[in-house]
Image 1: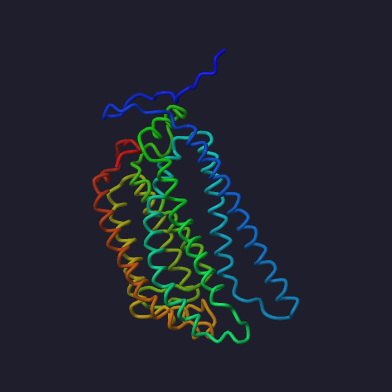
Image 2: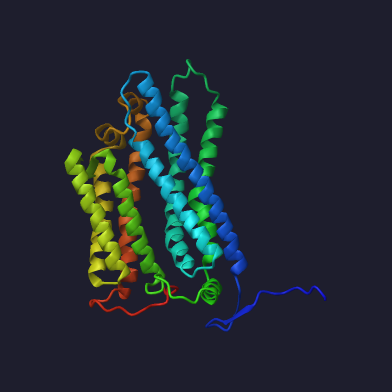
Length: 349
């Protein structure tokens, strides 16, 4: 029997008459990549858990008070959620589940955009960071400038890979009509993502992620609202209310209710404008000082870096406010004033 090359099977043609080829090999390949990413993130999760335990054990053995571990616990939660997401997505991709495309596109597209903005801002901040490190007294622990620059470059490259390259590869791998048809041909069962346009689904997903982020920050017991510092129980209640609003907005958005559009718009504008106003009233140094996120001596050491970074942080939140309003206007057509909504193809945009 001759070994003839078998071309990918045809899935028909799109609206433009172009033949669509089966993309199952590409999707399964991405599934393997996602499982690898999930495994690596799970290792970071375990290492963060180990760091928490080691810090508690060493501090207790030395007879001292256990330091604030909020940042460590936030890392544990972040890595745990990321590991669960990539493993879940990897299994779905290997099984060619139709929900994988809208989930990937709804999460990874905004991540690429936000990642680019953050990376560009980091490049400008890095210049000030290098100058600041050059001014520090390193006589006790001399560090060659070349080593410092190498660490900074490595950090920037890692930042670019995590927030731009990885999500960008996902977008390229899952976009297109051929991918949608491939997944539908292998998974004929209707899924929960089928009743919501991808752009609206993405909005709902990011609302849920925002709610989870707020809950993860609750142990800090600190919240700034338009420059006003809330602490203790008041901060926790306010965080729970905001997280509840995020979840409610996500559900209404997923159901494409008109109320969901208004709640989501108000929610995102409130968060962005409140954050921007907070950093206008308080610079980053004062923010860290009042929130108790960093020892006072460290804040004094890198005060000039905070001064140069504050305008970038304010601009970031203002840009987010404008972008959120513009995006909400583009998806308004999908939201119905009545409870009944029509099923829309997830690839619609």
